[in-house]
Amino acid sequence: MLHTLSKLWWVLALRGVCAIVIGIGAFMVPSATLAALILVFGAYALVEGGLLLFTALGSHRHAPDRWPLLGICLIAASGAASAWLTVRERR
Image (cartoon, rainbow, N blue to C red; front, side, top):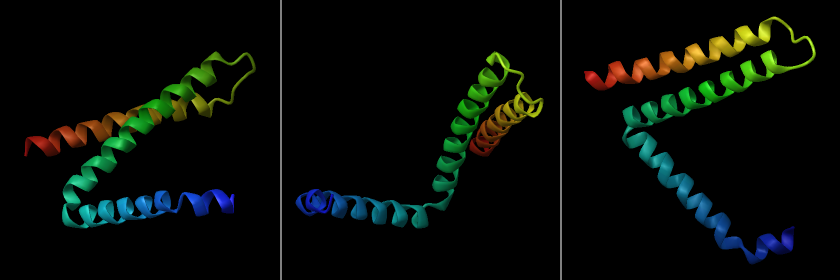
């Protein structure tokens, strides 16, 4: 592993430079950063909620009653994030 890292040192350096550039951009444009984070959270919550519902309702074993409710809550959180971004863009 160490030998591979020593041969590919430039990849680690490039990752570091990219992280620094993204960090500077986040400090310079915080509203766009917040919007991007909310968009990513909304997409994650939608996918996670859908998969959780699919797993809970499609399992052959009896799933605990809270898992479908959690899936619905995650999908609702995704909708709330999407609505917040839509209202924010209209202003």
